[in-house]
Length: 221
Image (cartoon, rainbow, N blue to C red; front, side, top):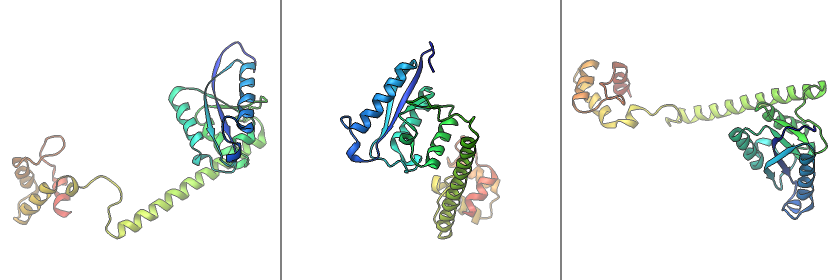
């Protein structure tokens, strides 16, 4: 790791219980000291620290506020090196660990431990296999969540509640819709209705008369 080129990095800390959280507590300070020592020995300049205090190592990465803030920092300023005390500080559960590391790999980030291990190294066949399994599991969970949300929306939609999509003409232009329906009841063509609406000041967001498809949506809403 020794190199004359200075590289910016951020530290990630995690304490598993409230008893170990806080700047004066052993666990947090021990992690910080180990990270700082490693950074100084390897020409790495720490420019930020992110901490998930009183968070279990088995808790999903996605639910950790400190990790979420870490991702925001990475995406915002280009830092591409994260240092942790050891792999267990990142996550104790292997699957949880790999999912978190995978999220960082996808952002071009390198995760180093204070003893020099590169957690993002994919040259180890067993680690590569676990990462592929973790990725597949993540995709499955994402697809499962999407399916659950869709089912919930469908149930609401069945009751007549609008739950997604663009706002309708009735929501955006209730007066125009009411007038269009009145003109439609008088057997006017859609083009004529559009012209009458425009004459009354009801036009599209571009300032032009409504197209016939819009008129159709209005009168059928």
